Image (cartoon, rainbow, N blue to C red):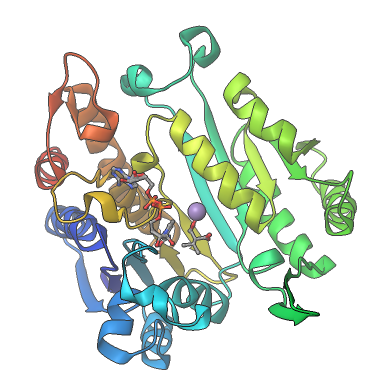
Length: 360
Ligand code: NAD
Ligand code: IPM
Ligand code: MN
């Protein structure tokens, strides 16, 4: 089959990790006789450097025309990069939020799974890890604090900054349904995470999620307050199947969940709308501290490419081949620095990509 894929190399480690993921996709093409037509799209800092803005209409239109887009991370070091001298709406992150909104990518799936091979890289005690864990964080991605009105005003010489957290019930309902649909194909449990003891938006969230749960009698729903959830993730991660939550809570909890899988360099993600289209990116950032040093772990991006094969292209067998290759290389003891442990072989970004490629 033939597919049109957008590639956003991004900033910092972005180009290094996307290059490895593309290697894997090329191998999949060769082995399974597909043709991928790649188109390079600009976003974030790279787009600022070329076009003066972090997101252009051209990138939006070309992304819309593609079957899916694979992306590295965007952004730079706020203390040193000239991008952060620009006003906030012109910085790299504004491009990322802009493309999520423009493509209506409201459902962000972040699977946090402990490879048995990475038990030694997990910072939790062995008795807490138990048999391991396998959760799907469903993060609402186009609402909440990220997209509410924000401004900074000055009153009587005192600066005041305002960020607005709003959700309407339709926004909550569609992500809740997506969460329950996914739970149905997994272990049939949804933990809806909110701050309903304080926030009106969370009380609405809870009430709408309960209405949706009535449509899924085979799925168990539990509610959890977000502060407790942050604690439960390190106390008993095995209890979670699908974590369903709003934008900001999902951002924070997914970084925490990634670390219990061994490293943020392992956590993939898919951002989906109502169609087959998706934007696939690692959950981590552009890691300016290690950019250009062949140190970045490309696995989160490679696993994001596997999610793209599965969700947007319906290539399940190919996706599984990529996931199995990752597992194989880990079982053979190869590790990038972030997941390194005693007795393993340290490899760089490129070598990790080559190894995974050769096991497909
Ligand atoms: P970060 O995720 O880039 O880095 C946090 C730490 O994790 C760093 O020590 C980094 O070296 C390490 N790390 C991250 N990815 C790694 C990988 N693949 N392999 C090995 N180590 C890895 O977070 P940050 O430093 O807070 O943010 C840096 C920039 O990235 C900021 O500009 C931020 O806005 C941006 N960012 C972008 C995205 C995205 O594009 N989706 C996500 C998060 C942050
Ligand atoms: C992520 C990132 C982004 C977010 C930033 C870069 C805007 O942290 O994808 O998790 O907060 O959504
Ligand atoms: Mn984040």
